[in-house]
Length: 59
Image 1 (cartoon, one colour):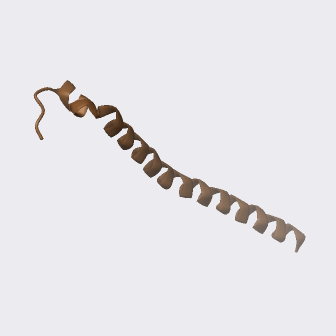
Image 2: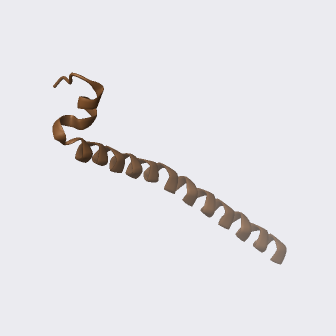
Image 3: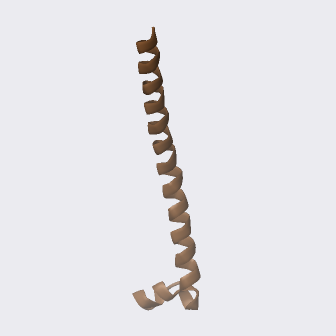
């Protein structure tokens, strides 16, 4: 499928809103799938460090 102009490409034959919305939703899901595990890892590591400090103090 070829488009005559960039605005035709953005409009996608009248389906542009749905096409670009689906791309945006997919991008958001991908970003969440990358960021969320990194944040969880950071939380787990800080919890483990806190637990180790507590155990070290009590022994």
